[in-house]
Picture (cartoon, rainbow, N blue to C red):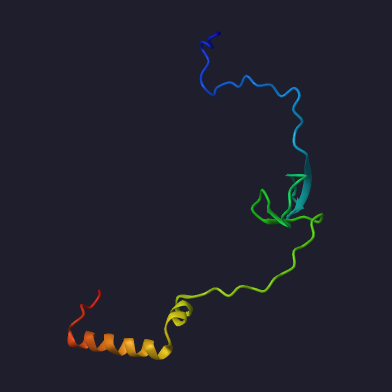
Length: 113
């Protein structure tokens, strides 16, 4: 049994890449509004290649090689009021408001700063 003196755990790999084939990949070209061209490598097995990519200058770059995704219906951003109306009717909310205002006027509730 040989001992491996002087080697640190994880510092050096004793495996070799001689007979290992690298994974297939393809470069996708992205161009930003400033004219910067970036070639991003993706796996040949990738299911979806994004239409947009963030350029090195921070701008959004698009790929002429990738089909532009169809714009789906825009999602409405639900507000606190929308979620409240899902749980209670407007009449219930008006009744609760009157109860709380009455308690506040009677001094039963502390006033917030």
